[in-house]
Amino acid sequence: MKLSEFDFDLPEQLIATRPARPRSSARLLLAQGNAIEDRTVNELPDILQPGDRLILNDTKVIPARLFGLRHRQGEAGETNARMDVTLLEPRADGSWSALIKPLKKVRDGEVIVFSDDLTAEVVGRADGQGYLAFNLTGDDFDAALNAVGAMPLPPYIAGKRPADEADKEDYQTYWARNTGAVAAPTASLHFDGPLLEALAARGVQFTHVTLHVGAGTFLPVKVDDVRDHKMHAEWGEVTPEAAAEINATKAAGNRVIPVGTTALRLIESAAKEGVIQPWKGPTDIFITPGFAFQIADGLMTNFHLPKSTLMMLVSALMGTSTIRVIYDHAIAQKYRFFSYGDSSLLLPRD
Image 1 (cartoon, rainbow, N blue to C red):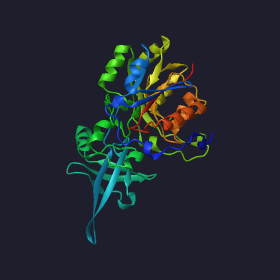
Image 2: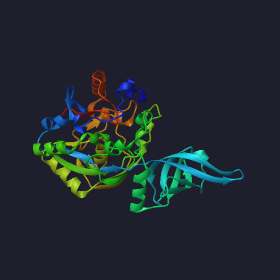
Image 3: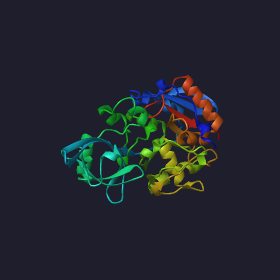
Image 4: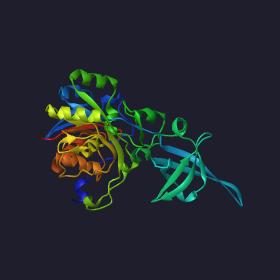
């Protein structure tokens, strides 16, 4: 498979920089095989069936974007450098891996000051990343981070505007509870309390799983043959209770529909011979056309970047030619793309 097979031209004006308000008023492209309908997210109770189970990723995004100062004392006196830091993931020793810009202006052993309360020492570096040991841990660290950190908006939004206070709510799902993501499971951003209540009244069921979305989700594919691409690993958990709920839905002949590619990747990672097992640990599953789905009967997801691993995933679910028709329709009808954009409900043929 060539990378060019997953490319398309996207008009710049279709990249959303703010979400729909209210959340559930976003547009929804409903694709059932080759049949396409233009709907809205708040119509989901009319679209889904009693007994359907939505799989929801309950990861919580941390305000991982930090701005600080590096102070250095030298022969010319004290000098300062502004540092732009994006936290990537915690490490086993308690430090954090991070993107530090400009990395060349800070040395190992130096301290970056983010606020009166929060500082971090550079304790190492590798592969273009730095390792930071913060002065605080636990709840104290969370409180200091929430006070000064900004939401780590995707590059295609951050390049158009800085993150602000609205993003702390907008870039967080309604049910977020397990802290650890540095990117949002964006398909879930369309849900609010009234929509969840209407879905429950319809007989739709919910199961929560956790996959901490990493910054690697935005890394471009740089190989021409996609089979040579190395996926980033992300930590996830499917509890025994969640596995039992999903298996019961499958056994009853009802549909399991993950909300977002993160939830889909996790449940397929935990599947074996058509049954989902409890899971806890990293997954680097890479879903491309030809993949045999064992659990997911469909997918609710936003519209993805050209030549991305997520374009490969939806192509695997719907078929490469069908997904091209779907995306052509979305562009022609001016659906809004990417993290704050509109949504789709993809239901492949039986």
